[in-house]
Image (cartoon, rainbow, N blue to C red):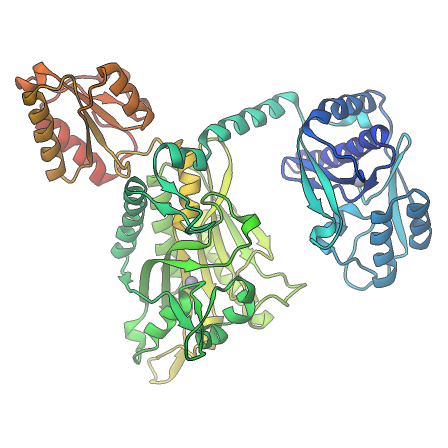
Length: 618
Ligand SMILES: [Zn+2]
Ligand SMILES: [Zn+2]
């Protein structure tokens, strides 16, 4: 496994060089930025001056790359002193490389630290003076690079150039704009094909497209970017999912609370959010000149409910839950569909407990998360222990010792739940504490970070939260933060694509659709009566009495991905049994189709909705 990953890394990185070689052959004056490996592929930042690479250039870049690959040029490594390397960059007409090397020479490091390790010829750590940098050469092409590379150009896997986008040099919009050419690469052509097929499928499932087709959410220019509006259908879906979470929480002792959406600055100064999220806060100045902010998080408010009365150890854990919106001023360029929004509905929950209760409480939260994701048809979860970065504590609240001990606490929880079946994400913690992140694999194999359990010892310090212990002394408590869906918006962006809009009966906006075969009054009356009967059982029953042909109406119900469709004609009006059309993905056994009395059918569906099954029992 590790070997495979090493090979993929080296081969993707080698392809970045090969692509740069090809681009240099085709556009000899090209100025090169950086060309790192990314998930599933690689990119290279290039500056062609007045010329631009477009999609139409991809075939010739690819065929030039194929020639370079076929010629089996070896990748040769060599080193030179930094000062010499600066001269090399000058001679070679590579101002971007020159800049990086100059930074390196001057500071011992470059400012774009994240880029360096992979793109420079050195390991850049802290302020150690760098002496030599390494280069790799293939054919006529030489690049500043740490490697590793495959032996020769013909040792790479299958690749494809995917797209080109604008990218500012070093990510700063005051810097020149370059072009970032992206490629994907896999060890075998088969893996590449599978990946490209997956992308095709993902396009069909794109939640922005389905959200519109299935009338789930809309955006309005007047309301603003990143502020989705939920239609009646979308609201049903969202509320059903939330109700599931809340029911599970209710069962383990959470109480619902409600809080206002704006707050004095003071709260966030105490919590640390003011300093941390300054630029992301929507601020409000009152007519009296007081500074308020739209809440970017709910925890500080919840601490104030906890702190509103004296707490004994006997009262703990205190558990609050509330699905409510928080607001973050994301940059408009980063907003997209439901994945990144400015109004974020969190299914938030906080546990206030003693340190000794952390484990038991985490297990409860863990079970809520597992039950929810299984119920939504995510069969595979992965677990990440997200820790602080001991080498770079600047972004974190609290001292390192405290971090070590809380990380160890979460580690124990993971170990007893899943053994070694988790991985560690160094530097992935929240600023106030480490967390366990849950990742779900969707129907087309993509992984998404979903739920979290976070252990927080900092806000209880900041807000001086205590309970009275057995000896009558105040004891510092800790907080657990746990969002199951994370946010409604983000979860739905994943869930819509996971299901391709084919929601199970329990959360489908329209569970049953009744189609009249004609417009006769007794047919219409029968349809209305069935709809009533269904509603009385809590079912969401739609009706199509339009003048269209039955075939067309069936097709329409299919497009809306309605789980059950009933065609109501003379036979049904006369009291004949109903033969439901069942959406294909719900069917377990295709031979089991039969007819039911109206009561039998409706009760069965109502029971499916109540028990939240993902398949039909009809
Ligand atoms: Zn390289
Ligand atoms: Zn929180």
